[in-house]
Image (cartoon, rainbow, N blue to C red; front, side, top):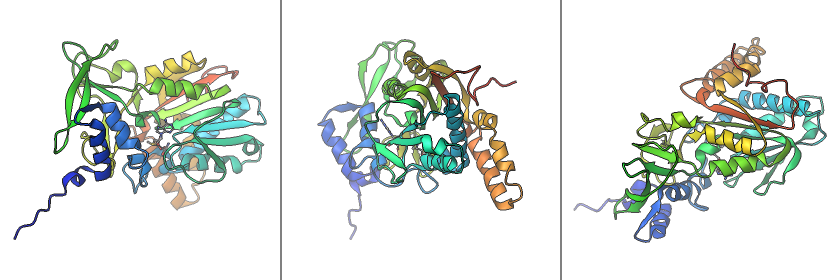
Length: 359
Ligand SMILES: C[S@@+](CC[C@H](N)C(=O)[O-])C[C@H]1O[C@@H](n2cnc3c(N)ncnc32)[C@H](O)[C@@H]1O
C-alpha cells in the first residue's frame, strides 16, 4: 500500500518560519522586503538566528574566514588612522554586523602583538543582533555610544540588509509583493512607485536601509573614519538597463541561485549595494568619501604580499597565506568586493592608504 510522503512546507525550508510568514500574510501579500526580513532576521527562526551560517561549513564565505591576513590588513589600516589622529589614549573600533567576532579577534590579536600603545588604546565594540559571539575582549551591544576618536568598520553588512524589489514597467516601477498560493510563495504586483533614475525595464532592488545605516555609522565617531567592505556598484552600473534581473541572489551550501522562495530560513539572501548612495550618506554626515577601490587593490596596496613573503622559510604557512591572498584578491570572487572609506577630522595629504590612484 502506498503511503503519503508529501513533506508539505518542509520541502520549502523551515516549516515553522514558513507558517509564521503565511500567518503574517493573512491571506494577502507582503512586500518582498518584509519577506526577506522575516527569512533572514525573524527573531526565532530567521536564517541569521539559527545555526552557523558563514564559513566553509556554512553557506558562503566572507573574507575573515579565509585567513587572519584579512584582519591584519584591516588592523594595519586602523593603526594608521590611530597614528594620524595623534595616537589618542582611547580609540574605539565599532563593527556593525560583526557576526561571530572573527574579524574582531584578528584585529585584536594583531594589536596585542605590537608594543606601541595601540592595544591599550583600542576598545572594540561589536554591534550584532544575531547570535553574537563570546570573545570577552569585545563589548557586544545594540546601543553603541558615539566617541571622540575611532573607526567604524563593516564587512558584508549592507549586502545583507533586506531590499525592496521592483519591476520596471511602462507605468513606472512596480513593487514586487509576495503571497502564499496554498503550495508555494508566489510574486504579485504591488503599487507603482516613483523612483528617480530607476530602470525602465527589468528588475532592480532598492536598499532603503542603507543610507540611514551609513549615516548612523558615520555619527559614531567625531574624529576618525568609516571603512566598509561590500559587494556593490555605482548607481549607474547597478541600475544599468542591460541588467534585467537585478543583483538579488540566494546562497545555499556555497551554491548561488536566484530563487528566494526555496530553503526559506535556511539560505542567505543578498543584493549588491549602491555605492553612490553610501558615498552620499558619508558626505551628508560630514565625512570626506574617498573613491571606492576593489578589495584586491586595497589589500595589495596595503602590502598584503609582504605578509606572505614574511614566512617564506615556513613552507606550509607560506603556501597557506599565498593561497589565502589569491582567494581574498580573486577578482571573480572576494577580490571584487568594493572598499569604501570616509574620513573626518583627520589631517591628510592625500587619500588614505589603499585608496591612492593606481600609477
Ligand atoms: C553577511 S553577514 C557578515 C558577518 C561578518 N561581518 C563576516 O564578515 O563574516 C551579515 C551580518 O550583519 C548582521 N546584521 C544585519 N543587520 C544588521 C544591523 N542592522 N545591525 C547590525 N548587524 C546587522 C547579520 O546578523 C549578520 O551577522
